Image (cartoon, rainbow, N blue to C red; front, side, top):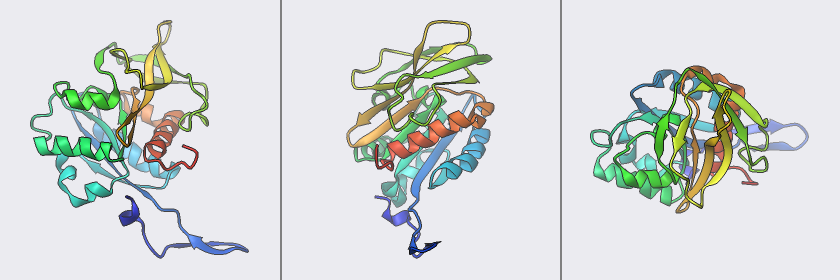
Length: 241
């Protein structure tokens, strides 16, 4: 799938062993836009930080027009952090179907924070996540994220917990085939809620990451690494994934 995006002829010199091909880069889009969040800041931070952690070419898109381009069939991963109340006016019926078909065919999805809230009237897209948004509390709180599966490729190099300033998203019960990686709770409270999980969708891998609301959260090293690991796993890049 990603062969069309590999730059041919790039060689890295390695002492004593001669030359070898430079690592192929993943090709992805970062889909942002909508309301109630600073998506420009999120895009800027992620475009800078993600390529420092993994080999990826990441293009920012703000609507569904990327799905109409031939290059959509060469995508490895779609990173989403958008907040659109309705699909109408953002995605055509053909684009909606194309998105689902791409994921079923093996394109990975990393859905971050607000994208879990997007398109509340489009039932089919919520099947990607295996659950639906129900409510959230104040965005002016600290949320403690605790990884409950430390053996998964997404989490094994992350600390047991980290803290971000955000709002805590709550969900309907997750589908049985969702694999929970992390739980989260508001500072000073005991009740935890699923915060990071994976799900298979056809041949595609989907990672849902519910933190974080403010741009500062995307500067937290642990959160940046969580996104990077999720992108690699969703794109089936890790050899042990």
